[in-house]
Length: 93
Image (cartoon, rainbow, N blue to C red; front, side, top):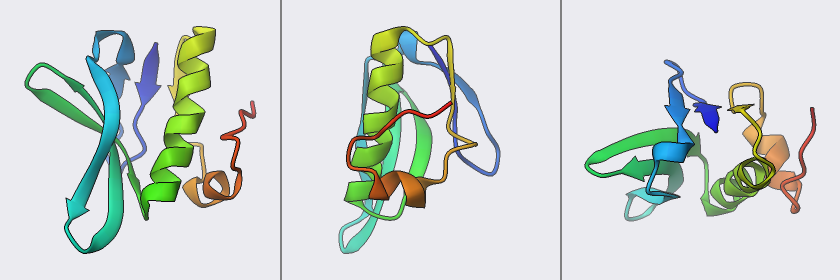
């Protein structure tokens, strides 16, 4: 599955080649959290989230798309603030 990152300079990342998808806290006392995909020595930032709950909701959006075998998920079109309010990480098309 391919994913288009949510950033100023979007990157197309092949999640089939990633070893894992996880979280990365930016600074010790800063609630900002990154959702990353890592493979070997390379890391891709999929989204910059304002806090851990938003990062968890973002992962909740990515997981069903991976499970369903969607060919492409674009995070650019997703409002992370809205996603944070949706506890299910619901998928809309």
